[in-house]
Each structure stands twice: as structure tokens, then as C-alpha cells.
Amino acid sequence: MKAGRVPGLDVTAPLADNAERIVRLRIEELYAFHPAVLDVAEVEALHDMRIAAKRLRYVLEVTAEPCFGPYARTAAKRTRDLQDLIGDIHDCDVALPRVRAAAEARRAADAEALLDRADADARDLDPGLAAGLPHAEEHRGLATLEAYLVARRGLLYGRFLALWEQLGREGFRARLEFALAERPQAFTPDSPDSNVGVPHAP
Amino acid sequence: MAKAQPIPGLRADTPYARAAAATVRVRADELFAQAEGVLDTERIERVHGMRVATRRLRAVLEIYAPCFPKDEGRAVLRDVKRLADALGARRDPDVQLEGLERFSASLTPEDGPGLQAFMDEIRAEQRAGNETLSAALAALDRDGLRRRVDALVASAEERAGAPGAAAAEAEDEPDHGASYPEAPPADDVAGEPA
Image 1 (cartoon, rainbow over the protein chains, first blue to last red):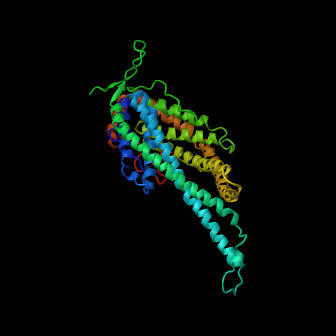
Image 2: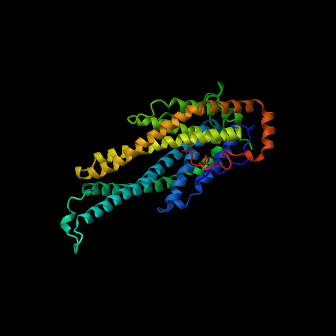
Image 3: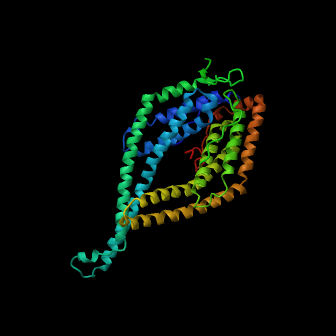
């Protein structure tokens, strides 16, 4: 998934004004995968959402504290949590086809070995020849691993749905967008406790 | 994994180009500080730390792209992406092996042979990934990545110090208002920042 171009960036403008433009676009990109990601079969959308979350996370990591209101820092953590969770799901999605391919390759090799054991003129395959095939001991572990990955994927996806719903309830997007319009007050000796977000002058 | 260092003096009203110079300098320092010992497959956290550092550097190069000369910025970004890919070629099997070892330890002996056979395949990938990473680290020195990143920092500082010149350049190049290079090459420097 390619990141969208951010229009209107100005090299001579303050950091916060440019960062705000970038973050707003990255938020839009993250939410572009909703509601597709609510479908468990939409693996690609979830993968793209992970990348969008990563982009949002890293821009917030640099800019949340100096540029925006307090919720931006919270949002950076939420975004990291989201990225990590989808990353774990992605790991299952990457591993599963590999495990299945490894299992299938061994089954195919065993079938071929079994056929080699049969007489060329045999009318049927003797079941006794199936004992002690080259990969016989390996099938079980691979089947167990596949079952584990399927189950883990299901569990993590459930957690993703819960986290996504929680972000909605928490007002993640609205609060982050509000925080983008805030600018932290300068920290000065006269106001040691006042480094809090204040609304950005219109 | 090392936490991202705060950027000294970064404020909301810091000029964009000055922020670019300050941020990229710190993130580049973090990356090059992580390079030692990454080829040691017994210390997999080092690869992870360096990979995260490349992600952070890549992210800030993208965020501040308009502050750098277009061609030089794009070339550095492409090389950082290549380094990240090489680190990924090692890191991905590292993570899989770690997970499989943990998984394997909790199963019955009957599951062992299948898991070990699969882990052998991943170990072969880890060795290949280490060779890829070794070549990428050699290319870092050969291609002078550090020197070129420093040149980007110097260029951004120069822009920050001469706002008139920066504004004039921006007028000459109205489409450059983007955090990502346009029309990336085949290896897609504007792809996933990871």
C-alpha cells in the first residue's frame, strides 16, 4: 500500500502545521480500511491497515509531544498497540501457507515413496507398505503447528475486533483530530506546570 | 529495542526544515549505533533494534522529504529501505524460530520431528538472511550512507537558515509538497515504512 502524497507542505512553515497535515492524511488512510477489516476473510485489507498504522505511529512518535495536544501521545500508543496486534495476525497469515506447503510436500514425497515400494504389476496397493514412510514422524508436528496457527489467528483476530471497537468507543479518531488542532504551550520557568494542550489559534 | 530518543529543541513552532535536520541527525545516530554485532545469530535483539532504527529513520526521511534535495533524498531513502529489507531477511526467520522453539517446548515428543524439520528450513533462511545482511552492511560503508545522510542534514539546515531561498525553490517546484517521493523506482521507496 503506497502512502498518499501530502498536499500543501511548506518547508518554511512551522513543524506543527506540516505535521498536522501529514497526520490528518495518515488517519484517513488508516480508516480507509474500515469496514473491510471487519470481515475475517479480508486478509489484504488487514495487512494494509497494519502498514497504515505503522505510518501513523511513526509520524506521531516524532511529532505528538512537541506539536499537539496530550491525546496525541495516547494515540501514538494506541496506534502502536494496533500495529503490534495486526502484526501478530500477519505473522500467522505468513506462516500458515508455509506450514501447509511443508506438510503437503512431505505427504507428496511419502505417496511417491509408497508407490515406489509397490510392485510394478501390483493390482492394488498393499496397506502394509505404508508403515515407516520417510516423513511419517513429521506429519503430526506439522499438523499440530497448523492447527495452532489457525486457532491463534482466530483468537488474535477476535482481539483485534475488540481493540478496534474500543478505539471507536474511546473516540480515538475524533480525539486525535482535536489534539492536532491544539498546540502545546511553551515550557518556561514561569509556567513549569503549564505544558498542556491549548486550542490552536484559528 | 532502544526507545526513540527525544529530539532536542523540537517545538511546534520549529521551522520545518530545522526540525528535519535535528530529527534526521538523531535518528541516523541511532541507526549507526545499532550496527555492531547484528550478524550474531545468538543475539537476535540486535537485528531487531537496528531494524526498528531503520524504520524510524525511514519514517522521518519521508515525513521531512520536502526539506531535502529531491534526488539525494530519494536515493538515501531507497538505500535505507534496502537496509531495512536486508534486516527483515534476517529478522523474520529469527522471530519464527523464537516462536517455534517456544511452541516446541510445550508439546509432546511425538510432535518434535515435524517441528524440527520445519525449523531446519527456517534456520537455512536465517543463514541466507545473515548473508544478505552482511552484504547490506558492507554496502552501507561502500556507498557512504552516513555521509549522504549528513549531507541531507546540512542541506536542510541551510534551507532553514535561508527562508527566502527555500520559499523561492518551493515556488519553482509546486508539486514537491509531499512527504513521499513521487514516481518511486521499481523497488518502491514509498512502500511500507518497515
